[in-house]
Image 1 (spheres, rainbow, N blue to C red):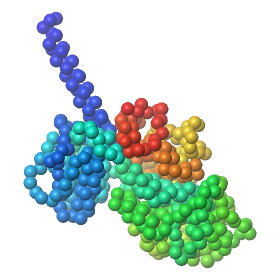
Image 2 (tube, rainbow, N blue to C red; image 1 turned 180 degrees about the horizontal axis):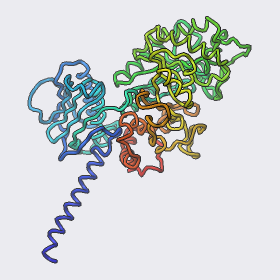
Image 3 (cartoon, rainbow, N blue to C red; image 1 turned 180 degrees about the vertical axis):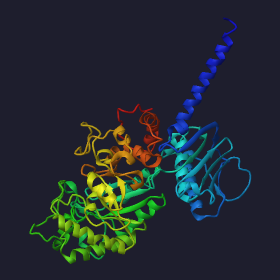
Image 4 (cartoon, helix red, strand yellow; image 1 turned 45 degrees about the vertical axis):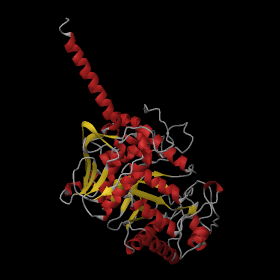
Length: 518
C-alpha cells in the first residue's frame, strides 16, 4: 500500500498536468478558433512576442508586403511592441514569416498553412487572400485582450504552438446589410466589413434600394437620391452614399478580401425610385415618400421602355464603381406586378447587367424568368423556385430565412427584431447544413452561404452587433468548415471561450443563455 503511493501521486500529477495543458489549449489554442480549421494539431510550448520579434516576408510581392504591414499595425497598438517588417534573410528564430508558395496549388485562392513553435510563426499560402485568413487565425491564437483599443499591462504575449492547414468549404461566404430601410454611415459599413472579415467571410451584399430609400448616387439620375434618399423607416432624414463614398467602401472591403455586391431591388420594393421619377409607375396609383415597413405595394412599369433606360443608367454607373463580378437585381415580393410583366421585366434586365460585365444575382423569385447563363439565385423562402432555378442551370446562394435572417428575434423577449420567419437562437442558426437543407439542391449546386440583416428595427451600430452576434460566427463556420467538421456541442464550447474576445472587440452581443460564456 505504502509502496504504491508514489505511483498514484505521479499519475495524479500527470493527470493534473494534462488537464492544465488542455485548458491552456482551449483558452489560447485551436479550442477557441472560429471558424474551425480543416486540419489542426496543438504542439508543445509557445512563441513569445517580444522586442526582438520581426515580421519577415520572403517575397517582394506588393500584396504580401501590405499584409505584413497590416499584421504589424494589428499587433503594435495593443502590445506596445514595434514589430518591423523586413525582407532580409537570416536566422528564423523570433520571426513571423509570411510566404507565398506558388507550388502548393491545393491551397487554392484562400487556403493557408499556419505553423507556430517556440522559435517562429510561419504563414504560407498560394494566394495573398490565404495569408490574410492565416492572419485572422493568428489573431485568435493570441489572448483576447489583443483585440482591445488600448495597450495592456498584461505581460503574456504568447502564441500556442500549433500546426493548421485550412481551406474553405464554400467560395461564397457573406452577409447582407440593408442600408435602405435605415441608412448607415460609411464608418458603420466599414466596421461591419471588419467584423465579417474577422470570421473569414468574403462577401458584403449591400441592399442599396427599397421602398423607404435610395442610397447610391446615380449622377445621370440625380432625383433618385435627392428625393428618394431623403427618408427612412420611422421618418428619419435618411441619407445616401456619394459615388466617391461608395468607391471608398469598396476599396476598404477589398483590402480585407471582401467583395461588395450592390443590390438594386426591382421591380418591387421601388417606391423611393417611383416617387423620384413618377413615370416609372404605369399604374394610376400616386406614390409619396414612405417610412413604413409593409412590402409588396410598388412596382416598376415593365412595359415602358423608359424604365429600362433608367435601369441601364443605374447599372452602367454602379458597375463602373464595382470591381466584383456580381450585381444583385432583387426581384423579391413583387406582389402587385402581374406575373407576365414580372417575367418580361427580369428577362429584359438580365442582359443590361451582363452588357456591363456583371453576373446576375436575384432572390429566388427570378427563377420564374428565363435565366441567362451564370445567373445565381439566392434562396430565402421558396423551395420550388429554387429547385426550378437549379434545373435551369443556376447556382444557388443559401440564405434560408428560418436559419440565416439575422433580423429575426432570438426569442420572444428579444428587444429588437421581427419573427415572421422564426425565432432564431444561436443553436438554430448553427444547426443546419446547406448541402442537405433543401431537396433538389445539392452541394454541387451551391455557390455559398449568406446571412442577411434587414433593418426595419435596426437604427444604430449597437443594434447591428446585438442582432448579428453571436449568430454570425456560426454561419461563417457553416460556410468555411462544412458539415462534416461541425458539431453544436463542441462549437458551443468554442463560442463560450470566444465571449471575452467579443467583449474586447467592443461588440454589443446578445448573451444567449444557450451558451455557458467564459
